[in-house]
Amino acid sequence: MNSRGFYTLFYKESLRFYKVALQTIVAPVITTLLYFLVFSHVLEKHMTVYDNVSYTSFLIPGLVMMTVIQNAFANSSSSLIQSKVSGNIVFMLLAPLSYLEVYLAFVSASILRGLLVGTGVYIITILFVTLPIYNLAILILFAILGSAVMGTLGMVAGIWAEKFDQLAGFQNFVILPLSFLSGVFYSIHSLPDFWQKLSHFNPFFYMIDGFRYGFFGISDVNPVISITVTVLSLLLLSATTIYLLKRGYKLRN
Amino acid sequence: MTTAIEIAGVHKHYGALHALKGIDLSIQRGEFFGLLGPNGAGKSTLINIIAGLTRANEGRVAVLGHDVVDDYRNARRCLGVVPQELVYDAFFTVREVLRIQSGYFGLGKENDVWIDKLMDALKLTDKADTNMRALSGGMKRRVLIAQALVHKPDVVVLDEPTAGVDVELRKLLWTFIRELHHEGHTIVLTTHYLEEAETLCDRIAILNHGKTVALDTKQGLLNSEICRKILLSVTTVQPVTIMPPEIKDKVRALQENYIEIEIHKDSDSIANVLDSLRKAGIEIADLQTTRADLEDVFMDITYRNP
Image (tube, rainbow over all chains, first blue to last red; front, side, top):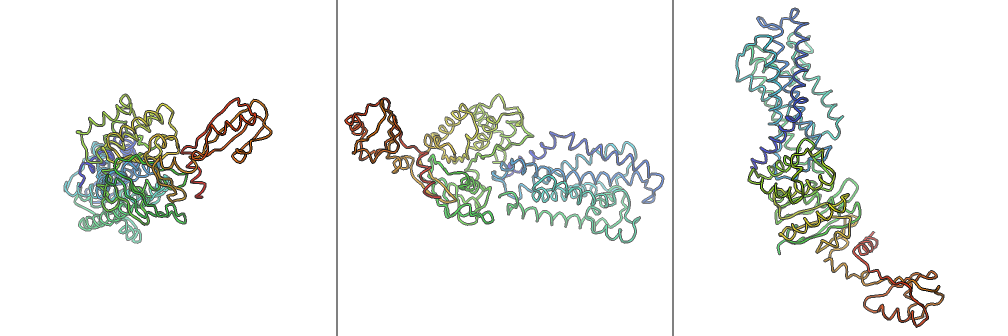
């Protein structure tokens, strides 16, 4: 194992987003806070999702997790597409790095960015409302698993896309709808039967529901199911990514 | 001498395009090897296969005995590649770029001394903390060379390193590459400047349409038939109307006061030709000789192997 090579790639991917922290950390935190202010102000008095949990409290874990997964996806996908389009990906491809090392470095940096942005949103929102923590370990587990899934999906999208607009299409037509329709702003029990059933096919729903369980000890589905779906998604996407890296798909040609 | 790069039966297809049609080459350790060919000949494809940036459809490539696919880690550790395109990572400074590249090869702070030496040799020291975006094209080219050498590879492949650089930088790069060669590095150079190949390379392969059409030492190529001919350009005092019969068949051009005579190095002599002209009463005002160089050899070979 080229552990220093892995660490360097992880460091480079992290330094990359750190150098533009205003865009990669501060901006998403502010955008999420705007969602928080608007939705909590408008719906606080009109919606009760769980007993003894205010709507604003309910909203925060969903918003934190939505930010975590969107930013984890953005990190790996934007880095790969930028490197491919500008051609500087050759520096990584010329190095004695294994497929696994490349995969782990990209995903680790995505997790780091996801957690940093999520922590930022959490810290600011708890200034407005008291939020319980039912199980810290579950909360952290879902944050890490969720950002790992999305960092990996970002790698698949970054490897597949040849142009920025293809990646933008992936973000706008896949990531954004799936994250908005995953129960960030509502419990799926409030949806009509058809949409409730459909939500169970959305892997983002399990990440957010499981994460929320870590705060309140209440969830729409059993957290064991959420962990299972999230881990299976991670395994499936990881296998796909490592296969693409090994084949050199759209990278080594 | 051991083999630095072994290329055996390499084929590469891009859809319907057969870019490399069975390339076999063996580049020895310590050689300064030139890879020449017109645009689209397959030089960069071959280099990309050696570097592992592209995969061959058939055949095998090894760097210092390490297969570039099966034993890619060791093959890449032995190899430094300067890409043809002026690519850079706009997020980082020169020093960061070099440290990152060094880290990819498993090297840490202990390599900082070498990084400083490289920056010094390539006159980059005062730009060490400058962002890559702010550098001129020539500076970016130097950083590319430093990146390729950051892990002290035995074999260095330079894909048109002097393309688009000014004369001063070209000379600096020539000196630097020569030093690398003298230190024992194997150098593989592709270039469109045949003067560069003639000056630097010991052995040269010429590719055309994905095939090796010539492979010889520089001297071997310069001793080819085309190089055994000398062109004599004579300007006369009076217009010439009649040529002496013994040199008539050697005349390639005749225009009033100007004659072009092609003579063969082995069978003719310049003195005899001039003697014949003088005996025929032709007074010479000016005389110039032109010998074929690598460019003529290149043109001749690529023309004969369309």
